[in-house]
Image (cartoon, rainbow, N blue to C red; front, side, top):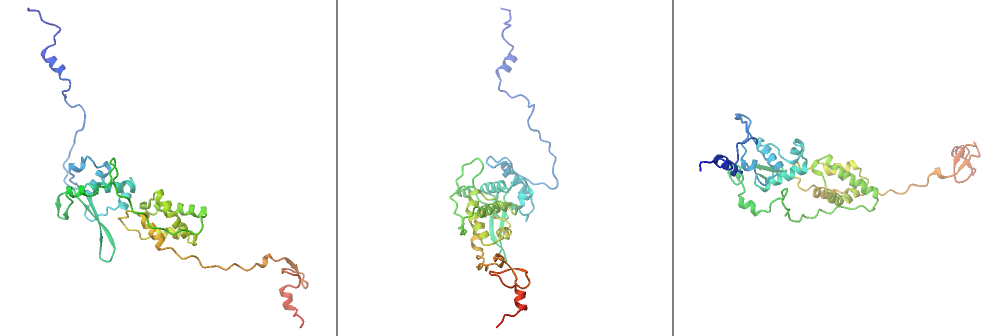
Length: 295
């Protein structure tokens, strides 16, 4: 009875072996090395930094916007010049922030008749601030949300683009020149990056301008001058409107040129034997002047 059971592990060993899922001391993971900020800092809530639905680009863009001073421009053109993500991705991130209440944009008319876009950045959506009341969560949920990456799109059908003029002919070279001009507009303004469907709709309008003896440079100038500084939500609609409303008149009618004397046969002058062009043999113009015709 005093013999020990050598096959039975000690009590401490059995407790450790039985608790396989107990977490031991951390040997890796994140470690914070924080230094208190005293100047040039922005307070960001974890509801934004750890938002479960916003994309990483939208979170980073919201942090950048909240760090800017009041009155700073945050339109797509300025943000595209500041970052390398491109106008399409930045516009999608702005729509995400609008859908979740971190950003509000409204167009207003200022003294002088010009229309500008007012942008309001909300560091805590749903809270009232000195700038006015933000949208409550219930009000935001009642509004159709903008599509976000990873979520199905539920947007309403878009309105058709305005009609554009069409050329009288169907020369392939003319339509190709119009398509090349539209594809190159994004070099003047990144917001004029058109889809294939929009380009196909606008190409006949550009071809109608080119058919009327308007140079490609003049067409490009008419389409890109005085664009809104911000809030260009559908550039193809604006271009279609300009192509139809500013269509120049056709070139003036030109009568056919008279038959050229260069097409008449060469004759040898009977007086000076100099070659000249005339329908029949005889004297050249100088000899006819020098020798008056008999009465």
